[in-house]
Image 1 (spheres, rainbow, N blue to C red):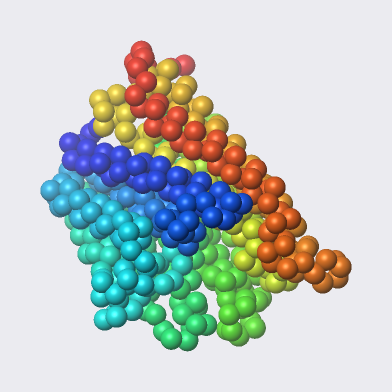
Image 2 (cartoon, rainbow, N blue to C red; image 1 turned 90 degrees about the horizontal axis):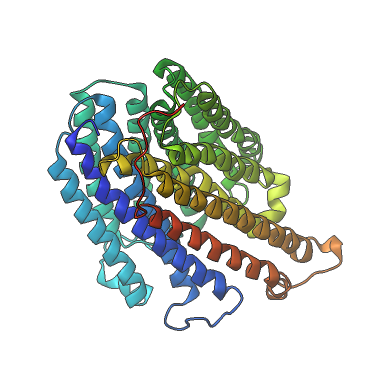
Length: 463
């Protein structure tokens, strides 16, 4: 660790992993509720468990991004963080707000939560992924402004690098597009139109810049490849990500009322969205193959390569499978969507945060060459457990989605089965998805356990 203030990233990473565990626990709960409908009812209804599951995903990834920035930016800028004290204050504010919000979801009915948090003054609640109370959204904005100020001032007084600039651009976009969560028009079509300006332009737009910057930083550290080479790749990747991602928002506008030209714009540019993810895959493997040294932290290198591959498969390939308007007409809102969402989030954003944690956490704990060999073996086992489990989750949901389309949405098939009857017919895939989820959870616990494994320290360089 080059700068003492980088250590402020550690509580962000630890809390992110704690929330990750909570997210998977609630994912297993709702997975079981798919096949055992009264499981934990009425204590934790399905809608509440799902809300907690998705909100924990978003919040822990934000903690991961913030921790990554607090570690990455000072090292890139070659200066101490502008205000470590501000970073600590924002951590406790964000952690408290997030924890109280989750407790609110579980402790009181959602309508009551809206009433006691002043949603009537500025109604913003009730929308998927953005269910958090208005007061929490205001807190998120305050935390984001303080965070951006801290990071921005650090960059201004230090070295300016492409990685820092790309990361800052992504973080600014994240904060800017979140403001649309406060816009809640009465017209449902208009509401959904701008709702995607948060959800889509985060995950298929500015978050890709954050992912690219973190991946480039880690690859520079573990490969020793010239910075100029990696930066040229990064410029091309983010340009393609923004061009395809911004106009590709149109694939969410197919069936909510906007003009028909969105069928064409959404289909064409969404079909191009796999390109930047494929470029990330080629980029990662190319940099590792050209490496000047064999970095002793092999686990972090594995996560970096796995991130590029799984992001391409989940966000690229599975996104393309149902993004063209003629196909999406049948698959919209089916388990095909869920299959894409699970692998895309895991590959692109879960894995990039874990990549950064796996690289930076050992250094912050006084192990500059990574965890011990024994610990890295355990960590790499966790990689394969989680990744293979996610592949099977995706495959089972894809199969369920295909059957759902065939039985429920194609009259020519001669089935004409109702929604609930269809769900009964594909329950086997839900059980298999649940079993895969348990394996994933075991992999996550294995990953956390790897940080507590003792062993011999690795050497600074290996041939």
